[in-house]
Length: 172
Figure 1 (cartoon, rainbow, N blue to C red):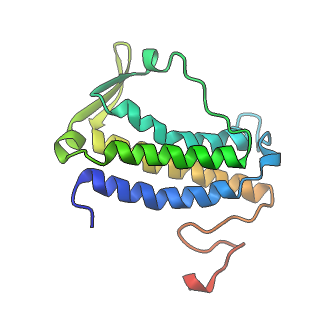
Figure 2 (figure 1 turned 135 degrees about the horizontal axis):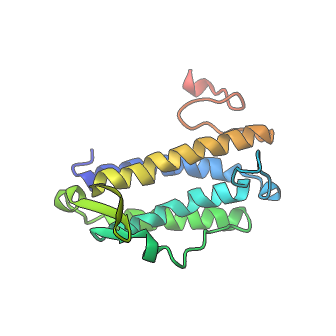
């Protein structure tokens, strides 16, 4: 059982990461340009966004991150194929976990701020903000990705339980 905020977050990231990886494995690379709507991300960009999200933890290692200067040269990751997508996700998740390994509760409860110049965009205990981004934000986009898969008639793998495509007896 995790005995610190960081260890609890790592446990959640590993569990949710396994779910995310299962969904990313189902993404058909020949449909990366497909969008369900003109204002929606393409399938490839949404999958790449999920793979990239763990890298954001690096911006939370200091007490303040300025999105105006820190994101000036940012270019979203765009995987070319499934191999690149999965390799990036695995590497990024492992990197985020490594950043947390030695963090104590004092560090995780310290206030972290995201600003843009003089404007505060978000602030809160580092552990809370980190969980929101690394777990909840990713789960939100993973849910979107399962809808994309359904619309493309790609079998939707199970995460928290069976799906119409995988009605396993293990879940009943």
